[in-house]
Length: 235
Image (tube, rainbow, N blue to C red):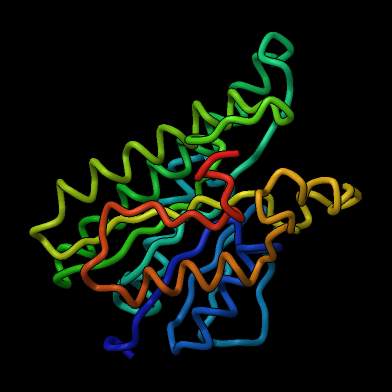
């Protein structure tokens, strides 16, 4: 099984992450899936690793599991993230720590862990889920902590893409707008859709299609793929 491609996906127990697990399985990848609440399923080619992605030990365990079970890591999808929408001065120390630990720490620890295996096997692909609010702030959605954390991930995406461009590792990001996920459960999707110039909300499948496009685009690195109904283009 050493020649089977392997994807590591964070935040994999629901929403976009759960759909990404299914999408990568459909194209033949084995998957190591992690989140705090994830449970083992029936598919022998999906290994669940429960843990807090904000902890370095979780990243170490995820990659150790991928290598011991499947022998390689071809793709990392940094999907795990939290979004706290508050006026800037209402953010608490707890809000700050939670968002930075998960959005930045989770990205940093796991991305760092996959680099060496990817270099040893001759290449790989890292994709991070950010937010289009990083580039197109909206007065209706207070998002400083999202911009601070996911903006850092966006900047690091370009930096990593250049650092490893000649060593076979591609690094990209998907920048969604408002996507109908469990994160927005109970919200007014019609009202949220108005934040997009196209006047429609995105669906989880839109994001998975975008990630798989980047997976299959060997000349694309350092790219932000906007899946936001035109939000990043302007108003």
